[in-house]
Length: 87
Image (tube, rainbow, N blue to C red):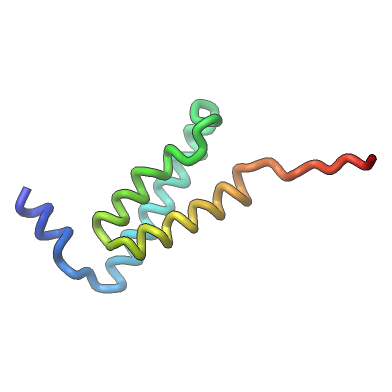
């Protein structure tokens, strides 16, 4: 328990922070695509643990950055494109 508190309270180097962020982004995105048939209705639920973990380990700013990155993944890769019907 003390080791976890020390990890959270310790200031991380930028290289370490971006390595953690990249690993969480890749892992959550891969997990979302792997679980696609089962989590179709809850698109963001797979990303929530990654965002919480990034905020916990790296800070609020980096959690928000990861949230925005996952928003782009959902907006461009997971949501169907809008269909326009001529009327």
